[in-house]
Length: 291
Image 1 (cartoon, rainbow, N blue to C red):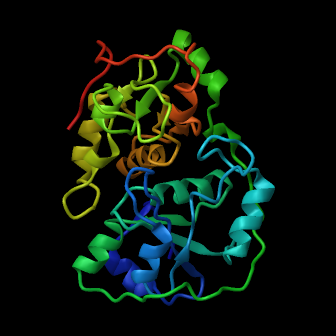
Image 2: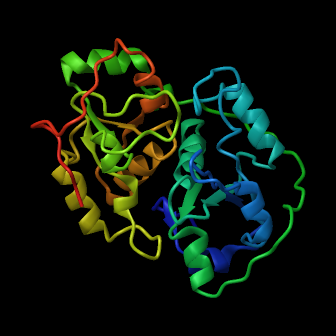
């Protein structure tokens, strides 16, 4: 049965866990300041049959920025090595709830694979509902062939973002914490200035989920999006620190039914690295705190 939502519940996953076309991945990622190892945490406990989708490895291997998008050929080789093929249904989750798993979901969509979904609540909700886990390394899967269908229209580059300062054709949403957005907290990566892209609006990823790690009800998400100007007609670009949690915002938009945004993968890591690029630190008249 085809799914029409980008999310699946723990009960749905439990019912379909042994479907022959279903592949489950832990796509956990931790910020440099968090001091946790996603691989080690996976070995402690993961959903039965899951493997790792390492968003810190499935990226451009040459660009010095943290999470630039890989070429279609590189992506195909990396996910094929994980056993992903074009006929598979993919469910991704992470160890925090909904933090980095949307990056794996979005990469699959970027390269043409629409049968990719995110587990609402992630591993925390799976555990809270008393569902089983396994420990140790992932069981090996046979390699597969994945044929990408690249969708570059879903991306925005540095030049696009610079042009947008004047044109204001697209609404830029920033998924970092409000404190980082307003330069009230330091960046987790050394050497980066604090603040945000001029004209951007703050929609922190952590404020879209409840205490159990699940997305808030759709009406609440729509209210949050509307408060920052997302009304279903605005053209949206999502940014964050390095292009990971920005995908969370894109998932929120799709789940809430208010359109499909684009990703700026360079995000704050790229924008703030050049002292000649303008930044803002306070709250301007076009920007709102939400939540």
